[in-house]
Structures are given as C-alpha cells and as structure tokens.
Length: 82
Image 1 (tube, rainbow, N blue to C red):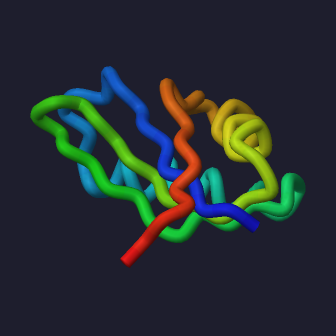
Image 2 (cartoon, rainbow, N blue to C red):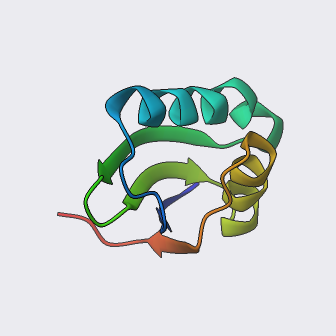
C-alpha cells in the first residue's frame, strides 16, 4: 500500500464540522476501494483541504472522494517520509 496526499481547492470558509463530515463520508465507504483515510487538514482562508490516506492507487483514492461528493483536485503519492 502507498500513502497519498490529496488536495482539494475552493473550500473557502470550511468549518471543523464540515471537514469532519467530509472525512466521515470518506471513512464510511473507504473499504469498498481498499483505502484508509488517516487524517484531513484544512485552511479555511485559502480554501485548501489536504487528506492523507493509504491506498492501492491514486485512482482508488479519487473514486472514494468522488462517491463521497468531494472530488480531489490533486492526488500525490507520498513515497518518502522521515
């Protein structure tokens, strides 16, 4: 399994409750794609949201996000970590 960081743009003003709801929507269906979403972060001012996951592919990450109603703008493999 590979770790992925995905990025969502255009979410200006997102609240902690909205971020939690979006993360929970991913968690509810992640097993269908053999994905596990670990964390989510947001900057309400810029409207940028980041999600860290483990998955078999970037496409699997994107399918979960699409089904949950918030398609990612970018999905990046994170293969080096310290």
